Structure formats: structure tokens, C-alpha cells
Length: 381
Ligand code: ARG
Image (cartoon, rainbow, N blue to C red; front, side):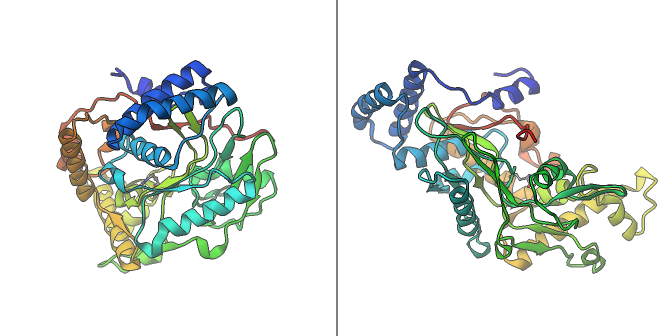
């Protein structure tokens, strides 16, 4: 148990360790035993471990089978303390792209991921796994934090676009990208293999699918000209399975409405839309007591759910998502596993006390297989 949020954060940010052969053997064997046990093939453990031993002695690393990779990635999702969507961990689709060796082929595989996961709106939880960082294979790094994202530009009249992306956008510009300077400009992919220079790849336009935001009752919401992309694909976390570090392993689920309506559009350091909505609703936004912020949040979140539905893009509301999480907790108990979690992330950013998560505490132990943060700093310019 970690006794503070800072310690939990630290555990999630462990640097990608270069494990010694001894440590690697140990981590491999812990993983293989648990994985094969869950897959109902304990009898195969000894032979497999002997083969892994030999491979580590000869090469300093080992190669996971497609089955190990697939189940390992699903376990990593199951272990993601901050994720409310874990009920669906077993349905994760794993795309094995370990044979991509160039930045360009990684970008192309990312584009395939986007289309596969999108599935015409019926979003499939998907992870693409590139080669791990090992003594025999080069480290692959995707510098975007998500495969679909909007640029943020710092201008003399303030920030245009997504303020959360200003640093990354400035980096892209420093290596030759020219953005249009708009509020919702798709960012290019920045991919690096080994020690070579990071490379820029513009996304084909048709790959960037967006949902225009409107409200079922308030026509003026459309006039705010808000939009958001369909699939959140996290691309800057390290996936660790059995001692192997997959430094490029973009993964996605579908959105929960509040991520967009109560955070991306509402946070003061993101699109900061609450006052604009409050004013359109006729409030004096200098007075707290009317709860104009709360009403503006509800309106924005209704708009997000309505718009995604209308566009045929899968999305879940926070009440349904927390109910699904309760089901996940029951399933885990039934299967004899304990659930770990980070309550501060699991609690939705609206109506928190209406959800069961609010009244519960969670064991914050960080398990592997798992997803970890990596060093944030962009390459030097
Ligand atoms: N909160 C992030 C965003 O708004 C996405 C994080 C992952 N979300 C998910 N539903 N899988 O873009």
C-alpha cells in the first residue's frame, strides 16, 4: 500500500529499467506462471521457462509469444488503477506490430490502429504493440501523448487551440511542422526509433474523424463551434510485461462523456468554455450562488453525449461507466483476485457522490503487467 498520492504517482513513473538477466528471468517467470495459470495451461510452464532461460542466456532478452503478449496486455489493462472502464479488459484486441523497424512503418501501423479501433463508430478497445526496448531491438518512441490530438498555439492574444498541447505543438513547429493556427488542428505524429532523429508524419485527413457538438434543446450550443475527435488513443505510456518494456504501445477504449464535457471543454487550462455557456444561459457569471458553473457543466455534458450518439460514435456516460466498474469489481472477486485502484481518478468529475466509487477506498498497489508513465521531456532542439 502506498500511503500518499505522490508515492502512487512515483510508482507509476518508474523509469523503464534495463533489467539485469537475473531480474529479467525472475520477472519473466512470475509473469509466465500467472499468465499460463489464467489461461489454464499450467502444464506448459516448465518447458516455456526453460526455453526463455536459454534465450536470455544467448541474447540477453526473450521474445514473447502472441498469446503471452495478448494476455499480458489484457492483464495490464486489468491492473490500470486509474481506469474506470476495466470491465472490458478481456475484449482488448491486440495488434502485433513488433516487426516494424522504421519510424514510417510505425506511423503506418498507427494509422491502421486508428481505423481498426474506430470501426465506423462502434469503437473497439485496441492496443498496437511495437518492438520492446531490448539488447537486440531498438527503442521505439511515439512523442505524441495521443494518436489523435489538437494543436495549441501560443499567440500574442493568448492561446489558440488546446492549451494542453502547446509544448508539443511548439516542438513540432521547431522540427518543421506548419500548423494552420486554428482551434482544432490535427497534430502530426512524431516518431523516433533508436538514436535517430524523430520524424514527423502528417495524418491523412480522412483519418481524423470528429464529432461536431450540438445540444438537443439549446440550438446556440452549436454556435460555440466545438468539436472533438472520436477515439482517445494514449500513445506515451510504457507497457511492461514479464520484464519486457514496450515503449511504444498505443491503446484505446471509447470516451466517457465527462472526459470531454467536464474536463477538455471545461478546465480553465484547457478549452475553458464554462463562462461562455453560463452567459448564453443568461447568468451573471460573477456570482457563484446561482450554480451557473454546475448548470453549464450539465449542458456541456448533455451536448457531448447527444452529439456522439447522433454521429454514431460509441461513448459512455459516467453513471453507466461506474456501474460497469462495480460489475468489474464483482467479477474480480468471483475470480479470486483483488482490485487495485486510484480513487481520485476513478471518481467522475461530476456528480461524484451519486456513484458507488465515491464511498469506497481502493488499494493503490501498482502491479505488473501494467502501463507506466515515461519521461516527458521532448528531444533536444
Ligand atoms: N482523458 C483523456 C482525454 O480526454 C483520455 C484518456 C483515456 N480515456 C479513455 N476513455 N480510454 O483525451
